[in-house]
Length: 303
Image (cartoon, rainbow, N blue to C red):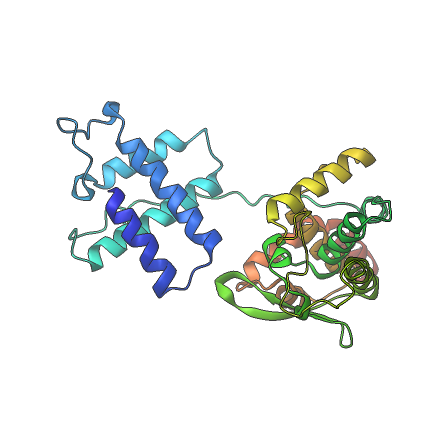
């Protein structure tokens, strides 16, 4: 099992050009399944030998999903099942097994959760909450302003280089999921914060910043990680005592919600977010009920 997991990860990384984050998620899900199979209570161990991929049938996978139930959300279970389907499909293509045992297992029905977001006044309070004149303070203001201004994913923000920011045209170049490139509009306030941060960062060197340098640096001069961005946001939220805890992805939800509340077209927001499916974007309409009722009351002739 472990050997086939390694082969699968190598294949999806090379053939499908999946991002490191996606490959890491696949590996974690498959290793968790392998660990589950390694428990003697599951009846799959034979004299201490490692479980073989041919030992797995649909009943084993159903048992695994039952094991996950109650410990994980339905969306997480559905993702893990999807990883297993891809893995066993790969094994069928390689001739290791004849049929895919995960193909006949039904995906758990996923509830439509309403994304967490900040109201406009709390969002503005958050943006104004980073004080100070240090390089890190300038950087953190640039991060929060850009996340809210563009709605980009935190991994997309961390992956930006200096040359990805077009100050003249007001765009940032983003490398999204599946390594798909798109241009995202960015507001003047965010651009001003980015420019101020780069100016502040350039002062000690005095020789300018190369366009292929990371846009965001940590205190050791390396590229800032997604985890560090999440930590700094958590710190600002705690310092301000905001009522609603928010993650970097929550700022993306906030961007989409505020755009729709202000009258933006759903398909435009889909393009801005880089969603492949309109269905993914539609979940943000659930948090705009107040605006929908307002439009209904004004427009319906017999309200």
